[in-house]
Each structure stands twice: as structure tokens, then as C-alpha cells.
Image (cartoon, rainbow, N blue to C red; front, side):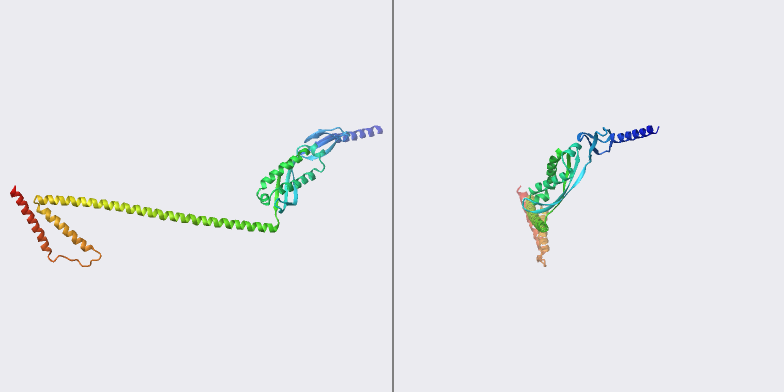
Length: 309
């Protein structure tokens, strides 16, 4: 009875061991390789799996999630012989657990060294100005080269970023002076262009003012000439009307015409700026009388013409 009990215990322990060795659970984000008699046979994806105890065993447990590697700082000589310190960061993800396990030894070390060597190669083919101004192009070129080199290892490089490009201190100071000189140059150019534009606008304004003044004077002269012409026409018409009135014996028209001329002459003398004293005729009534006499003569002339008729 005791021997049977011991045997049952041994069988139960064996069953537990077999179950422990045959059932495998792979967590999410990982991939396990299975080896049979030391040879790779398959890859276990996340989930519950059964393998043959004592025949199969788990070879490598690979993290299939995206991972990051720091590319340590190193000195790089540019194409124009400038020494700079460069470091970066690299993101990768294992696509094939078997290739990453059996195609390369020390995967992270291999990827890191690929990053170091390719950074030296890519940056060493550029001038310093290109290094500092074409960061995106450098990252894209490094990604293309490193991804192609790691593809046989079952690895996909997703991103490569240059963190810092640090030139020597004396070169930084020279670049700062150069930048300041460039900014001063641009400031002087902008100031000169502003002065030039201001002078051009000022000259254009003066030109426009002269043109407008000439047009104004021309318009004024035209209107003055037109006014004089109208006045001459009016005077000619008035003279004609008076002549016609005289010929017809209209004494009042003659008196009115002479009196208006006399009053206009007195008004011009009175408003003259250089004349403070108004000279009046010694005998104004004589002038009026003369006007009346002229009127009588014209009247007689009119009667004579009437008698002849």
C-alpha cells in the first residue's frame, strides 16, 4: 500500500513537471523562439502555447516593441576639416524574432556601432554649414543607410535623430562674429533701401506738386482769357448798343455810359494800394455838365437827322 502511494506521488510530480515544461505563455509584445535538439523550429507569438517537454525548449525571448538606443557622443571631421562633436538617438523594432536571435550576436551592440560608423560617414561628407543647416536631410540619410544594414537581422529602424552637433568653442565664436556681421550688413542695406525709397517718394511728390501747380496755372490762365474774352464781347455789345442809341437820339443812354466809365475810374483810384490821396476833378459838376452838353449835342444831331428825313 505504501509503495503504491509513493508511485502515485512520483507520477503526479512528473505530470506537474511535464505540464510546466510543455505549456508556455508568451506575454504581449514579446516573441519566443523554440529550439528542438538545439535547432530553431518555430516562433511563439503572444498567448498560450504547447511544446514538447524535454524535446523542445525556449531559445530566445525577444522584446518585439519599439526600443531606443542612445548613440554616444563622438568627434567627426567635416569635409572642410572642422572638428565637431555629434551624438544621436536611434529607434528600432524587431520584426523577426528568429533572425534577430540567430543572424547576429549582441544585437543592440551591433546596431549602436552601425549608428556610430554611419554618423561619421554621412556627416564627414558634408561641410560644417551643411551639418548645421540640413539636420532633416542628415536624419533621413542615416535612417535609410542603417535600416538597410539591419534588415537582414530582422530589425526595422524607425527613426534616427541627431541630438546635438557641437563645433569647437573658437569656431562658435567665429560663427557668432560672422552672424553679427551678416546681420549688420543686412541692417545697413535695409536702411539704405529705406532712405532710397524715401528720396524717391519725396521726388515723386515734388514732381506731382509741380505738375499740379502748372496745370492749375494753365487752367487759371485759360479761365482768365475766357473771362477777358467774355468781357470784351460784353463791352463791344454795350458799345454797339450805345452807338445805336446815339444814332437813334437816346440821350439817357449816352449819359448812363459816360457816368459809368467815370464812376469806374474813381473806384480804381480809390482802391489803389500806393495811393493814400484821391485826386478828384476840380470841377466835378463841370464834368457832369459836359456830359449833359454832349448829350444835348447828340440830341441836336438826332433832331437834325429827323429834319432831313
